Length: 136
Image (tube, rainbow, N blue to C red):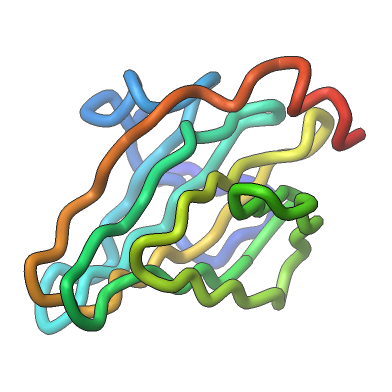
């Protein structure tokens, strides 16, 4: 499989199943579907996912382990945080957020789903071009 940005994990296939929740092209390679879900998610330059919430009545959320490139993570009402290889983001359940690549860089992270009771994802509005362009 193809690799980008010296990532040790495979690029995977185009993330067509979730394309409606992304601006730009992303790729998905599942590393684990047993015990906990771990996915290598790769974003082409400028690609980002919509605002979303990992809902849960107990537990839940997501952990991002940045493996390659440069990107961003932002919680609703907070400034965006630049992400680089080695960075870790702990996203609590029920927090509105988005993440994705910088305009000029590929970006990859491992997405670790934290076990949850009554867990679900709620996909919301896209990150506007105006909001995104402010991050350069």
